[in-house]
Length: 422
Image (cartoon, rainbow, N blue to C red; front, side):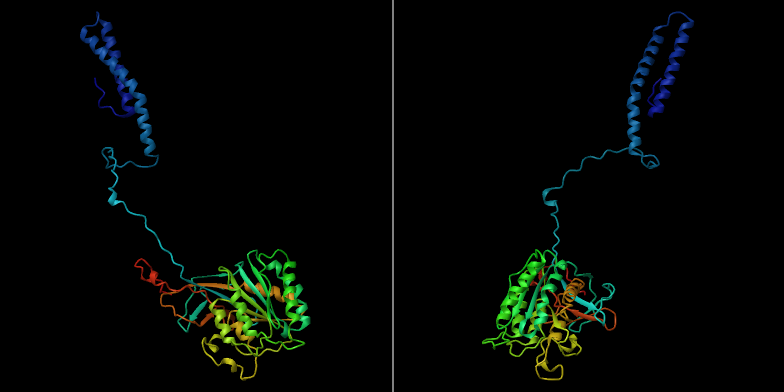
């Protein structure tokens, strides 16, 4: 009897049982007669050998079945079409010339980043606005919707505080100490603050960064005010006076650095100028080009001209705008310059200065930052930017946009993916 046709543990067990039965039958047959013959002994010996071999195979077959069950978990069905297990030969490595080199993705920053001040008609805060509500026009182009928007929040700022000593009341100026201390809790460690005072000369302090305590701000303020007031021209005329727009251009140039900061200029002046070599449109263009936002702060009793300050009324590059308010006499263009650079004019009494200064910082932190792609066909030179939020009458003032310039090498790169689809 051979056990070659038995498979698996169950088959081996059945084979052992049949061999054991055969041995018992052989023993009974040999016990009925005389001593067993040679053929009977050989049969018994062969049966005993096969039985021993099968007992030795039981552990091996058990481990084989357990390994097969682990590769085919419970609940999975074996492939009925598979007739046998095939062992795959190891695949040789590809030849050196067939190895693919790693691919490199070249990403070029090509987004316009636009800070926008958005308030209600009464200059109050509005509920959050999503990117689908904002619309941007560039030189009267079709509306572009930003890719995404966010609040300015804790972005680093370089804050220049400009004080026109000759054009401000003394009581208003002396209330600045407490007002400057009020903005200290609202500043971030990476913010930079610098004070400018204009009398017969333009004075400035060192940049205060980081601001260690409120006293550091008030000391810097007092230093610049004392120097500016000593030669303010109030008692005796200035031999070589410094004029407003000239001074503000210089200040705007200084606060444009370092990179990564949003430059903001707060000007405590009534906006009257009578002798600058530059005009207010020049200041506006420079501020927009370098993304400098101008705010004004005036005494609540200061008379300023009215009028609708809108981008369409003041196209960039157009000269002869001094008669916008219907007169060619000396006018204050502070509302125009501030609103066309993304800011506004704030009014305050001397006692309300701390609250007004705190609101000024809050207005900066609550600005929206709009991001949208600049296509290769983006217009060169000055660009008139108009922003809407889907509401009628909202007070929306965009600052100058930070626009990356087109690199001819990048545009001619065949692997460059164009972003012309706005």
